[in-house]
Image (cartoon, rainbow, N blue to C red; front, top):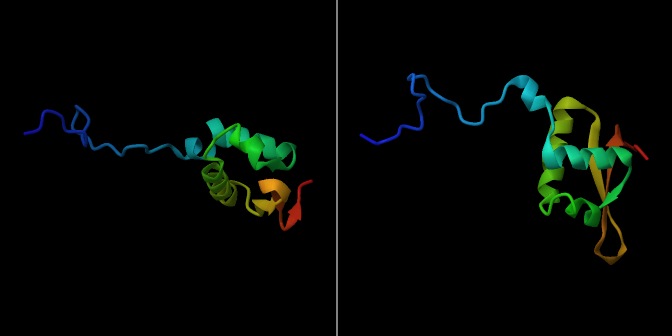
Length: 98
């Protein structure tokens, strides 16, 4: 018998790791919240977003999924600029927010 059984609470009931309530799933926190705040201010470059998270492309993917559920019709568009820069912006129903 193992010393610890991580699939059960001491009381015996099963645990579902990382199971958040529906209200908590609707909230954005940390880097995702900061990047969305910046995008609501206007278009942002990859350099600016990397200052928030070096894995900003993962955060953009997270935000696109979150927006599909919580703000249908809104997404994030990207456009390549000169010099290796990329611009990210919020778009709503096919029209840029800025």
